Image (cartoon, rainbow, N blue to C red; front, side, top):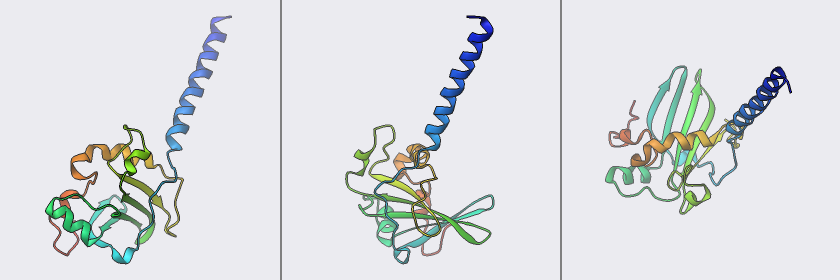
Length: 162
């Protein structure tokens, strides 16, 4: 085999490997146990702005009280991120806690008993979004119940914290 032909095969194999890895990363969306909650029971406790996106984050009053007193967050709790662009909702991100739900994933992906799901504005599951990256990112927030906005809960006094 010539050197030129060997290099061509090596590039082909490398390309297939990289392509497979990219596909594996992009296909992180998966159905899970997360349900879409009743938004009427949610309390908007904080707003986060990221460029042209405004995110209103909410949970139940019971979850807010539990977090402010430092006991565990109750099973069945939902946190909802409602993403807006140009004043219109374009997505929801929901995290829900359930007893034993962490066992659904390997140790490297586990985020306590929290699971995550993206939803369309119609409140239907959006399997085109990658929940695996959400789980990986939240690993750094283990001491904050896997919530980036946990410090804002202690500041919440009825008006969303910005």
